[in-house]
Length: 204
Image (cartoon, rainbow, N blue to C red; front, side, top):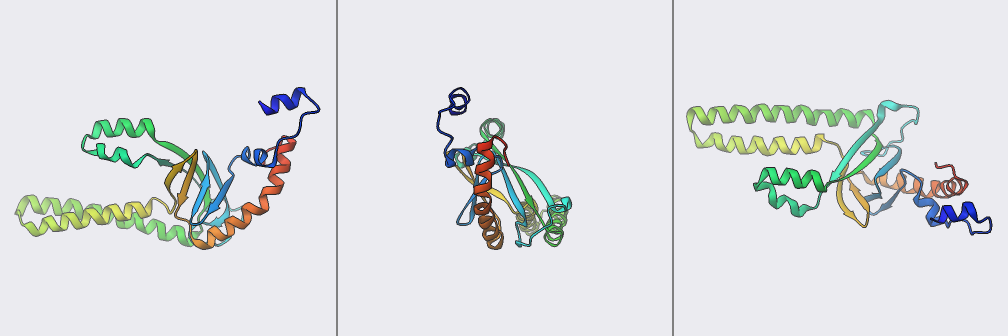
């Protein structure tokens, strides 16, 4: 509405700095250990795991990922799987995140996938042994391999995850303190140029 008034009224006051910054796509803010943003967050070219700065031209270290958040209360419906899936798909919130992951950290991340596959194979093997021999010790192996499989799957899914959704903002956690410090200084440095571009009608 304000932009329409400015287009028709040459004497209208320009948009405020706060309004101008909010329309910049991919903008984010750092609060403690959390990265705050709306539906799209574009993080600077530094590894979110170790904080090492990456070349902007190196697209191989750049990642684009959709993160999802649902209210924790819906997990009480997990005993009714079909209802849970319907509610989950209907109420989940999506945040598109672009971030960097250095080669060394990416290699470690891939190892979690390998471990997850190994734990899955062990899980299946333990179930087969439990069925054939009916030994209670194999049940312990089933439980341990299942927990290991879940742990490696979560770790292999990536360092970033949405921990909360408040007042239209996603709270993303998982970045290292070194990256958060770099990202905070980057956000401050980009705030003024972004405002000028937004007021001029050209988004950063």
